[in-house]
Image (tube, rainbow, N blue to C red):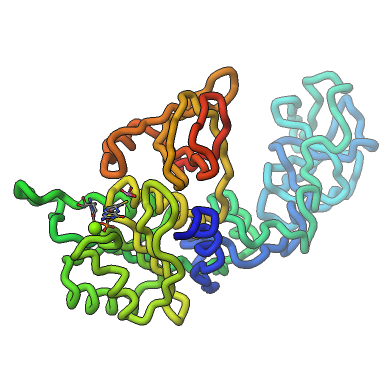
Length: 398
Ligand SMILES: Nc1nc2c(c(=O)[nH]1)N[C@H]1C(S)=C(S)[C@@H](COP(=O)(O)OP(=O)(O)OC[C@H]3O[C@@H](n4cnc5c(N)ncnc54)[C@H](O)[C@@H]3O)O[C@H]1N2
Ligand code: MOO
Ligand SMILES: [Mg+2]
């Protein structure tokens, strides 16, 4: 049996190799960018008027009375202020007229008109007017050819705006693997059925699908009965269509726990079976010769969820924060296994504390609703004392 550390290392060094695909800009939100995005021109691309008002040349005007010539609207080619002692009305988003360097808002001027002649005077003290004000200078945000977005980042609406502004109607993103969630077990019925006395409703597949949905990954779900021929045939079909399989149940020592043997019959390479951990000891992990990845998670719901959070999530999320918590209660655990205990975290004097919920074991998934993660208690110790710091695997707010 291998340790938790070895198991995680094997999982991380056998990840599904994602390929790059090109998608329409809007379809790229939530995906991982697979190319650097460069500025195609300066940001802003011209000296942009930032306020509606009057533009002029600061050094050349008479501060008492500025004759107004012309209007520069947004979307118009640059106008030229022929007589630099005069001003020109400008609108936000327009290119600053040639010959001007400063803009004063309409709110800060009084405009008067006599016949054909229109002039402005300032309604604020002259000292408040600064040369260059209200002009968003060309290239002041970014220069042409600057890297605006680096590959590897997760695309949000802010990145969509940047890519739209540089004309990326199609974007290269990492392809998302096709994931199948397969629950197994004769005792399970669908959630809209009333279980008989010896049956239960299936919940693992919903739990896994929901966890993946939270990180923007879509899945397909299947349920298979504990029947060797059915498992062999259906798993063969699913492996042909999907890139990553998440199975739950059928991996332990029971007479109908066929999953490991069937996966071997299907020609999969077993990378490990059984990890020195509680819960989740019977976990199986392997791959196909073509690099498709199979996680066969133990069926007890807390085991399924812990194995998912500890091993599956790090392969699908671009970044996983390493977190630590302070245990708030002594725990004694003697077996030579890493012990993952559901905990509820809270803050005390600025430190993150963890209150353990031992519940009644790995089938007690109702317990998880009181918790927000697992604390990881290492094998090397048997007594874990209140006040000690341990690793924390968060599952709430993924
Ligand atoms: N003799 C041994 N027995 C068991 C061992 C062992 O080492 N020796 N390991 C125990 C541990 S630890 C676990 S965890 C379970 C793992 O069992 P399997 O992966 O074989 O899963 P099943 O036998 O199919 O089911 C176990 C349990 O989980 C429930 N289950 C399964 N699927 C679902 C689902 N989709 N939704 C809700 N609940 C599910 C199932 O009804 C069983 O109660 O084995 C121990 N036994
Ligand atoms: O790991 Mo089992 O998960 O202890 O019930
Ligand atoms: Mg079993």
